[in-house]
Picture 1 (tube, rainbow, N blue to C red):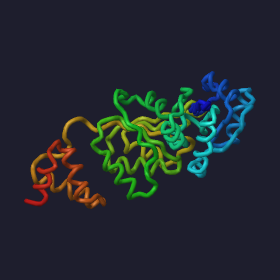
Picture 2 (spheres, rainbow, N blue to C red):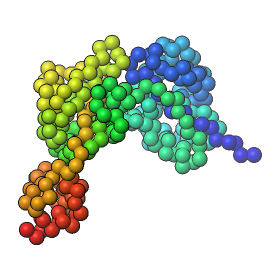
Picture 3 (cartoon, rainbow, N blue to C red):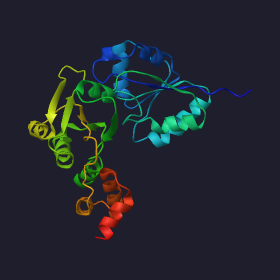
Length: 280
């Protein structure tokens, strides 16, 4: 007889206060055959705080060994074991290890479930005071200034509220790039140390937040930025279209991509923008 596969369980862990841990987390930690942890030392502290003893095998599963460790964990799942995946904080696979294992499990028809719980993305969005009916999560911006600017330029016309993660020492640079590419008057919220003792949420125009961050930022940071106002933000006359394409090209965007982006922002077929650029 063929052994039925086990189950992959993605478990959310507290982003601050251990009291926020979902009750089922302790149960899953105690009963899993394998616990894959982003940081086994943090896992030890978590289980101590929860008063839980892990009976199963504990293995590390982090960015550096994710590719190599995924087949091993998949083998355990196919052998019928229950594998619990936890990261340092929040939900696995959301800017944390986990996606590769989930994809492999799904491909192998292994059941995948989750222990829902804390999420910095949703917590920051909820307390930001910005529209929550439509939003997108953009993760971490590129570290290099040029790549960061190009990424943000591509989001200039995004109408949904945007959520970003950022390292504290790069927060001012990220806010400055946002102000440059999205506009200094764009409203945003910087959420620092969410749910922790020194939680702080600073709200205001990006230009003001750049000045605030100049004094230095500490702790875990999530940035929420309002989306662009609805409607075209590029005029449809040929001169304006050419200028918009030229601006993107100066920032390093290829002409083809610039034409597509300007067409989207102007609400026009790309052929009209192409003609404006190539047939003035």
